[in-house]
Image (cartoon, rainbow, N blue to C red):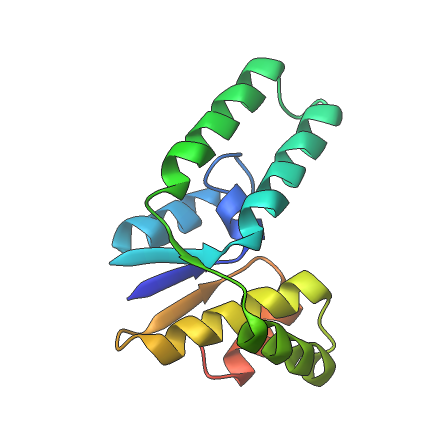
Length: 138
């Protein structure tokens, strides 16, 4: 199984949140882990917000950024191209998704179409998870 991590669950690998343990288990059980290229910027935004809100110390923030940079090299990164972006537009309309959520779903569907292994879509967002199920993702 290939695990596709939407940013909300990617962040859980670095910051202790609800379901962090479950996401870590999914990662350890997966044959490969994938995400969209946009997840890097989104994760860094989430880390910076936690630092500003005093949920992280400066030292923790620096360590988390370093850990993300190290781990990023081992993830299968879905790049955005015209096909993915246009698909995201269609998905946003169909499922009433926000822009980056639609890009994540389109990226996961692109991955599913390119591989023979099942793709498990992991997100903390209920609407996005429901939309992924409607599109045939686990």
